[in-house]
Length: 175
Image (tube, rainbow, N blue to C red; front, side):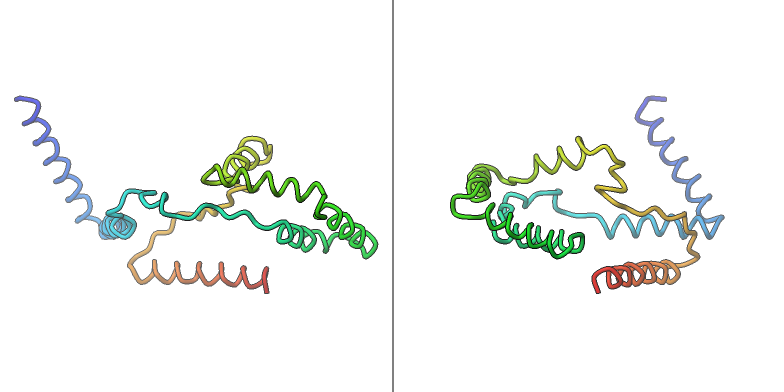
């Protein structure tokens, strides 16, 4: 038997074995159908990142936007005197001849020559220099135990409850 005939026979036997296994077990049948549906829902006819070059570059926030965001982020941790001192330092930093203005100009020059001025810094800081676990501190994710759904309705109900819980969590955090 030549190699091509062997591969054809092997593939047919494998398909028949799989088909018998699936048809003989309704739970297995649902899993197989679910996997096919999942793959068809996530499949794309376009290559990943095909239109990346059409996207605008990451904008550089203005110095005043950065200062405003900084002050807002530290405010809950400072008493009134510390907050006033922080605001004073920020005014000096962002003054016309302040170091912040010079650094902002350098950042804008960097942004003019790169697609994404933040990318290298982010990759180095978040993934290479930071010594805490990436999954928890940089790229949080969730892992759930395997769920064995009897039908599509159960899977959709579970998914809807998960989305509802995530939205409730967001509301609890952000109001």
